[in-house]
Length: 420
Ligand SMILES: Cc1cc2nc3c(=O)[nH]c(=O)nc-3n(C[C@H](O)[C@H](O)[C@H](O)COP(=O)(O)OP(=O)(O)OC[C@H]3O[C@@H](n4cnc5c(N)ncnc54)[C@H](O)[C@@H]3O)c2cc1C
Image (cartoon, rainbow, N blue to C red; front, side, top):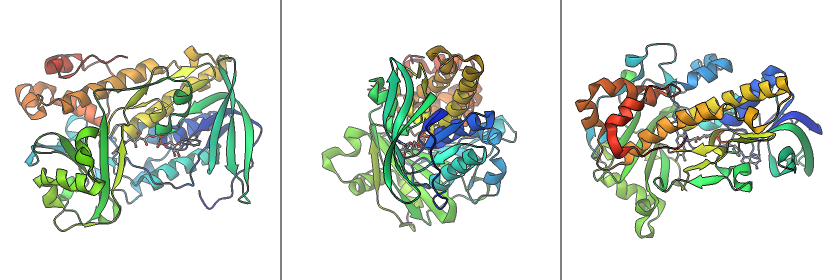
């Protein structure tokens, strides 16, 4: 993508998508496939680095619709068959093998470098007919009353010259990730006081992996005092992504640096420390914080939000890329129907939001349970083995169905009511 020349931009498109991550690429690809003139504007050079390497199985269906499963099968991305949780820094629970509950083509997924995975998605969008422009930063959205009519974009053209351009569109899709371009401008963002989290993460070569089917597993390890947890995500080339998440006030307590925070928490997690004994860190420590938020509105006249631009819950269940792809798919179908009906109202463009929000709510409740100090998944599942398949369904991403009420009711008040 970075080596191909930048396209010449027209003055107007049916749809302009801001942001070329998984949400923007999927919505753009599917709209182009429907036959709508579609422009995807991505401010970075492509490929670009991004956190969020572990996929969950239900991503399969959007990837299949996009025609990308064979490319993923041919890739060097490690296969992921399970996720395994550890408590108190040492105690492993039985792995959740996805195929034990739903043995089908989607039961295996991948651990991906996001630069090449996201580039694969953008390349596919271009193959399906979308115009993809990297190094194109949207700086303003145009409105006629409350209806969006286009954007202003700063582009670097094929000669390396910087220029500004106004581009009109019938539908504007905000897929800007955590920048949440439209939701921020329209004052729609709400944070979640229960999830004020921060993460420090880095990459190691030669971290000890399990073998066989477990080699590509995601490991989630809570520390001894349950105040933080680590992820372990095996990547190609014997590199492993290792991150630690905790309340913001805990992770950087006493003004500790990223390295000090990481190492302090590692001491509380012997099971992770043991896997890193012979490993070499190959990148600086990276940090991010206060990333949980939701937009009060998912669509308006002429516009809709997808992926993280609409909201982000928490990294613990690796739901972000799945929800980005799924919302891209939902939104593409709603936008196509809008063109069919010549109806670009908030109701039509947001016709998918209710179903999506219910699925997000299911993940969110399980996130609250994970962080509740008095709740233990191990204890819960020992007492209620009949709900193991429900928990596995959520870990897989099979959340767009109404079957979870009884399971959450049994968990009790560890899961506060979630607005939908
Ligand atoms: C600590 C942490 C760990 C995570 N781990 C996982 C994981 O293991 N698995 C998982 O599935 N998810 C994970 N996630 C979440 C995941 O990274 C996101 O949910 C996912 O990237 C969302 O995709 P997106 O397309 O919505 O946004 P993004 O991937 O962020 O893409 C948005 C794009 O918009 C572009 N952009 C922004 N502003 C503009 C502008 N004004 N003009 C043009 N372009 C713009 C950006 O450059 C970016 O490329 C994690 C998140 C965090 C914070």
